[in-house]
Length: 250
Image (cartoon, rainbow, N blue to C red; front, side, top):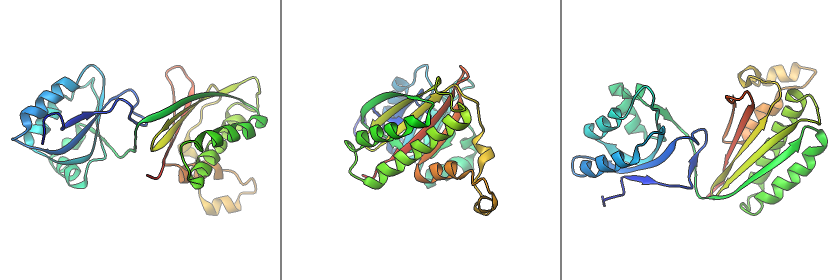
């Protein structure tokens, strides 16, 4: 493997949920022959921030390579390994090393095209113009009508829930949208100061839904089915932050 090709850096790539981590890509086979290169690149890569490595192209890593990564683990530094191949992941688990890292499956968004901020009033009347604006925006980047419809539908359901349940139709309140559009998908962040909620308390059950005269609970199920990922957390400042992720077909 040529020098400089073990640890790759992509400045305009992102893995949702790990925006504050430094992102690197591990690839190929890491063995005795190229360990010195790997060691030098790892030393140059690590700094003060937490890191995440995208590993879908990592075919092999020997004990020296594992040991180097383990040496970088500490109580105040989080190392995330994303999209490990099954055989590499199984080896880490067998050795018990999976407990030292955070191991996840997560899509990689590449080559950011546009970053758009929108402010939406907490009123049902704001839903239609927001749908139209986002639909027109996405048509610049995707010709797949199904993908666009799925994103717009999921966003509308999310906004509707926030407006009704979080902000109680208070039109003086607003929802801040941040649309990060990449070459292969998008991430939408929704930020508001309404009531907090626990998505785990809203698991969808079809039989219960059919028996429920109120017909509630379908929206969150729909969002999770149409998107690649839905997540919610409360920020340190006490605001609600929802993240919607959708990868485009390539």
